[in-house]
Image 1: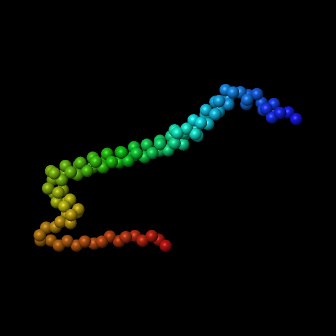
Image 2: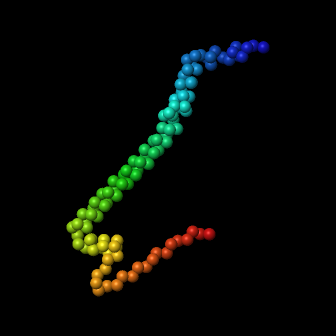
Image 3: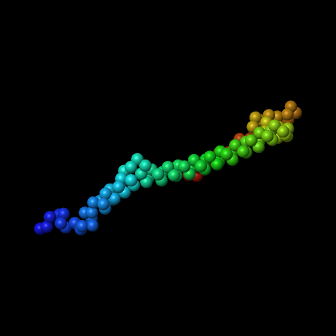
Length: 105
């Protein structure tokens, strides 16, 4: 019966190959910045970029609305009526509650 080391091919016993395989394993799986962590961070960055774009668009929209409120009395009246339920002295205000949808059973 041959010893165990004699049955292993020489190319597997190569110290450079073993060092390279160990290096790749450490870098891909055991390092603090391993492959899975990098993929999670890339996904998180993508989500943050999307939310950044959303908030930029909302800021622009709010700035336009603010300018309209500053310069247009009709827009100011519309805003006050919708948001704060303000009314003129000679009119009545009726609030109709919206129906909440119940989940299908």
